[in-house]
Length: 257
Image 1 (tube, rainbow, N blue to C red):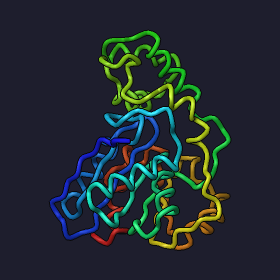
Image 2 (spheres, rainbow, N blue to C red):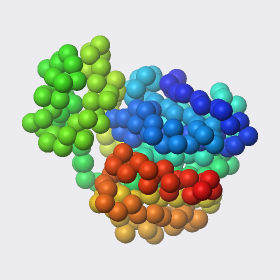
Image 3 (cartoon, rainbow, N blue to C red):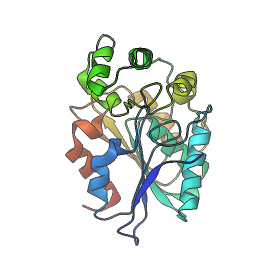
Image 4 (tube, rainbow, N blue to C red):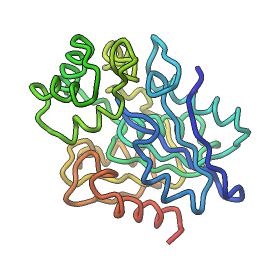
């Protein structure tokens, strides 16, 4: 698996930071955070498998995605890195920390828990994505019109349309077929019983239901040194809704402010 990535390595003396996007995303989703961090840290942004410009595969699970991250770090000759992941990317980051803790300096998880989600959260999203794939619009504007009957939230449509590609047979840069086929693998969490004792921060969107009070015991079991921060007034896309606050929280955790 070849991951598309960018490596901003102006500050080679600091521990590198890997930014990991969520489902249906790509590496520039955390671009504001990247711009904030590169003043002090080497930063690596990636497209996960089946997303962006990375290779496509018929397989998609956290074991494979974590392996992809470590293969890239090995290629870059990086022994240890801080991982920051949002949503599905948060699960990838947690999987890395639990599987190979000696290679993870610290961990930041944005609005995601180490649990299996049983509710199908993306029915409308998948319906909208498939409608675009079937109707073959030739521009983002046309694709937005196709998506509107399924998704009334403009912000969600705008997020998805960042991955629109008029040259792709499905009109999407991500591998829609594989992501849909492996949706349950993406909702799953197969790492009960493992533990990462390193420095960890969970950031919750105050209006989001991905990180819930009933998840606290599970988080403590797997990440005993975790701290939590709630960002009030924002939902699941907290890094886009309140980027300055999000960036400051991360900087404080990393010790830069």
